[in-house]
Length: 242
Image 1 (cartoon, helix red, strand yellow):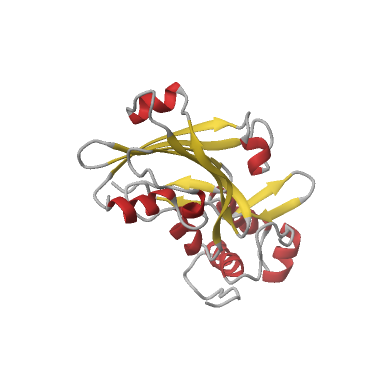
Image 2 (cartoon, one colour):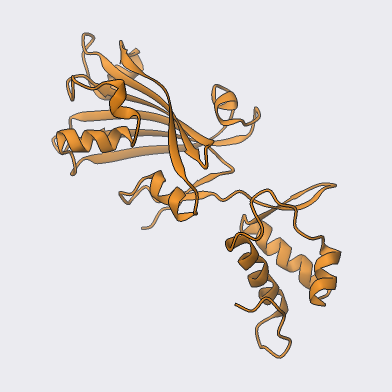
């Protein structure tokens, strides 16, 4: 791709500049968090009018590739990981597609007596324990989400902490119980951070988060796993293909 403006081309000047700036982002020349050149510097570098430069930057801001900070300038936005809940690949695949290193940080994993709300969602009796897993989802070692997962002991009574040091709980259950034809029901809600996610995800009170409840059931309707999760609203988005 040319990194210069071709004034003889029928392609609009603002679109040419947009492609030049995007190439700098996508080839790693400009990294997330970097301050980009000012409007005046871009005008001087490419010989363009203020109107053309402003239109280009506004398009990139609206597309989520740049963000403005009053009194400071325009910065490269951290990528949002687009997760399509109607297809099988998980968040790991989408993080890798952005060229980042996915990972988990295990906070705790143990057997517990579940609260009533968990029992109701998993359709289990009062004597049934659950294996409770609390983890942080990482991208380049930065927390972008956290998970609380609950798995009934009736599904797999031999679960232990070591089984969750790598990979997801659902992946493990598929391997053990061969639940490849399981069904995932997700509820997604936009919320403001006001609880443990503030410290866990490094956000401020009131910042946007995506709250997710997921229930995995076997084809016969038996609940396998209940998951409650929260993701940073500035780093994650759900894309649905119908």
